Length: 169
Image (cartoon, rainbow, N blue to C red):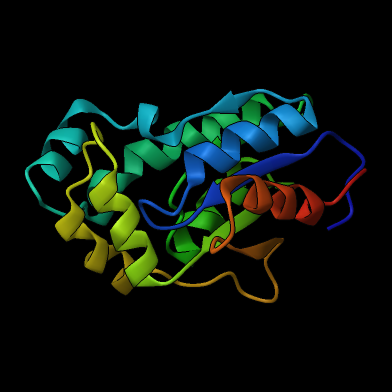
């Protein structure tokens, strides 16, 4: 990826992989704005997930559009946003809104992530939906701007790996 502007990064992965923790830390390290992808979900999506039902592509459409708009609005200043971006077509949609987007896939085992989801409190994502996210996950392709980051270390170690993976202008 060759681009001279500020970094524009999507921290992606299944629920419970650490997107929020790593995304906030990465934005601080890069000195760019941060946005929580969950905040872009319409109330109907949150209610559906809270009830234990996975989102379908129709549900995700408006959400991806909002995240794409945020990325486009921050194309010059840079920014970090979290978004599961599980499928290639979702990432392509974000790249069509902001062509210089770089994806950081927080990658970990289903067992590790299930344990994290079980331990966290106050999140709307039902733990039983994790299997549907892993089933939908399409890893970053060699032709995509991005990197996979292992999450089996501490949050600080994961954030450091994420920061090192982001191309500098």
